[in-house]
Length: 141
Image (cartoon, rainbow, N blue to C red; front, side, top):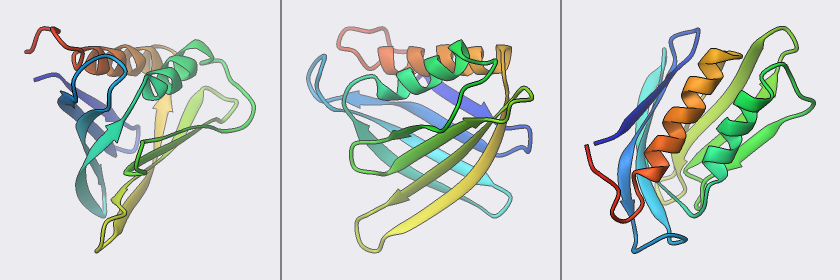
């Protein structure tokens, strides 16, 4: 199974692990997300369509020197939300929120600081590999 760990400078962690794609390319896919910080740990299946999650992390890696405003991602049903800002001095600040809208609803949110440059490039490549592994016929580890 392919897994990605995004660990912040503070030690907070977003863990993503391979799930499934409904039938083929362009169809919904799922993965398991686990968010951990000093106050708790939460996990939830995350459903989405397309490559917006890859696009977020590829954009962060490409523009590691900085950008204006906030870049964001939200999964199909709102289980996983990520907002990214560059602080202008070489760090990327993520606000990551994981939860369930189904009753009883719940949500865990944490701030994560990543180093710009190589750290962001490694994360982007790992996330792209995870989503690519959900394609039909992709090798499973």
